[in-house]
Structures are given as structure tokens and as C-alpha cells.
Length: 114
Image (cartoon, rainbow, N blue to C red; front, top):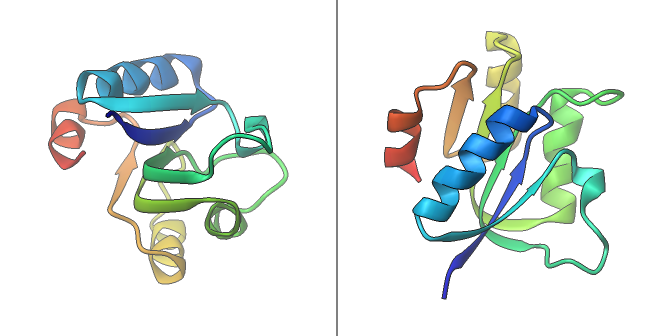
């Protein structure tokens, strides 16, 4: 049985690349552009969640709190183009993050972590 993974990434190219990587690693990957794209009838329990932080109308810190409220997951990875150390520190204070990657990402390093 494949492990469930959720990928939340607006950038279509990056979403496709990471989704393909997850499938190669044996995950059953649900890839969406935003948290709002998830249907209310879909599962909310994932082995792995990979998400961006940049979404219109919401601060990154508020967004990760929404992730915690709406989803259950074992591991959380952030991949973002934001690149602000202050935001990164704030995220680590709010939630347990297994990896925080600035874009462009080293996919070989990321693959070792998942």
C-alpha cells in the first residue's frame, strides 16, 4: 500500500516535478495548487505534507496554523520562494517542520529527506 502524501504548490512546474519524485518514492501523491483546492470529502490524514507558504491573502504563519487545523500528518516539509529568515524562524516556532527549503531547491538533497 502506498503512503498518502499531499503536495500544495501553486507553481505548476515545481508541483509536477515534486509530484513525480513522490510517486517514484512510492507515495500516493495528491497534488493541488492551494489548500482550498481540497474537497471536504477527501482524506485529511497524510504521512507527508509538502507545501509552499506564499498564498494570496494570508500570512505564512497563519497558513501553517490552518494546515495544522485542517490536516493530520506525520511529516511537514516547506518549499518556498519566500526566502526570509524571519519567516522561517516564525514557522519553526509555530509547528514542527521536518525540512524548510528555499527555492530553487536541491532535489537530490530533498529526495534523501523524504
